[in-house]
Each structure stands twice: as structure tokens, then as C-alpha cells.
Image (tube, helix red, strand yellow):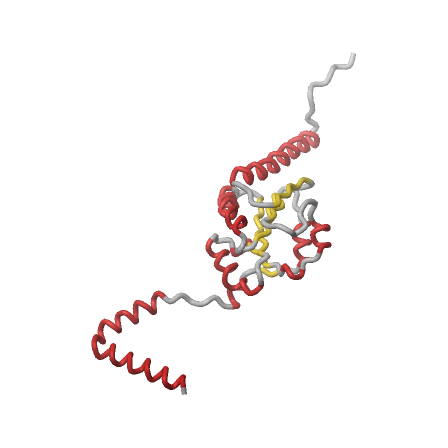
Length: 211
């Protein structure tokens, strides 16, 4: 009965408005229809990759000696996390032509995957770099097996690694700090590679002549 009354009232109101100014109402309706944005659906989540803690561990351990891996654990509801994301986005652009892989692991609630996380991925154009991780599945062993300083009690957390060297940061980083950490690892491995190439080529310092 209530539903019938509501529909009746809406119908009467609509007819009245149409009768007073049909042309204006029609124009406004068209404008309103253009402003309506499509609702996020499961399809949006499907475009984001969900991994189990075991799979995340595999990703963290995968390594190519010439690749720098930057893995950031975050949540869209975390202020410090969102504060540092623009620094990562800027660095991604700067290193676009270099062997550097950025990965953002979302620890948001599953109910936010299709909305907040999906919007976040689109805002920073990093949909292909975002991984969904159900934080409810994480156990103490996950942190002990993969990290030296992070126990999961605080975010953001960033792991930067290349070859046999790594750097862990618990908490938000400034742009200067992020740049320094990345450049230090890139510089170290570049130096190591030069030394290795010299050794392979038989290049060394001046030798004393034997008499």
C-alpha cells in the first residue's frame, strides 16, 4: 500500500512538472542522465589480481638479478599510505624504461575491492600493478618467512630489493627518502656489475713486470 502511494505521488508530481514546463524538464532529464556514472561491479574487481598469502610469498621471492623490485603494502583507508603513493607514481614514470617493477598490495577489506581499491587503481593508473590480498588470511608465519622488520602491525610497509640486497621500511616515506633508497640499490648493483664484467674480461690493475 505504501509503495502504491509513493508511486502515485511521484506520478502526479511528474505530470505537474511536465505540464508546467515540459521542454525544460526534458532538457534537465537529459543532462542528469549524462552525469550518472556507471556503478562499479564485480568486473572491476576481476581486472585486479587477487593472490593468496602463499602466492604473495612466491612473488616476493621471485628474482631477476637485473630487476629492482619495489613492493608496497597499503590500504586505501590508511592516511600515511595514501600520502606516499604519489611519490611512488612519480618514480614509476621516471624509471619507466628501466628494469624496475612496482607492485602495490592492497590490504583493504574485500567489501572495498570493487569500490575504494578499484577507484584508487584508476586514479593513479596502476590497475596492472595492484594485487588484492585478504588480510584475514595472514598468519604470523607469513611475516617471519618474508620480512626481517615487519610483523604486520603497521602499514604502509615497503620492500625494495635487487639481487641479494634489500631494504625494508615500516611507515610512510617522503619523496626524498624513497628516491634515496631506490637510487642506493640501483647504484650498488650497477657497481657490482661493472666489477663482475671487468673480472670476466680479465681487466685488472697494472701488474709488476717479472724479472
